[in-house]
Image 1 (cartoon, rainbow, N blue to C red):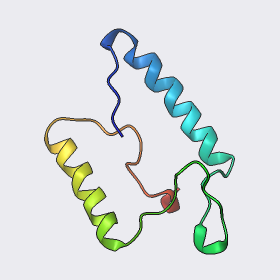
Image 2 (cartoon, helix red, strand yellow):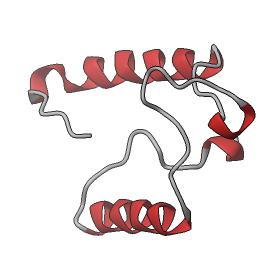
Image 3 (cartoon, helix red, strand yellow):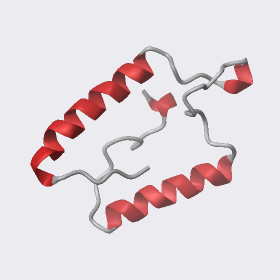
Length: 79
């Protein structure tokens, strides 16, 4: 997902967004569907190893182009 945010409000926007995502994850809203979990928010594991590799490649391409990754820099299992 991409967001376009004006430079003037970027720092505060990222601060709030990070806080909300951290709370969302800490509250256990992302569940494993293989264990009967319901991901009504649309978040969950990638469908297969190829999807994971594509996602990792996209993150690498972003940083190589000078972009920054603010979320998703690591797997949830790495926490």
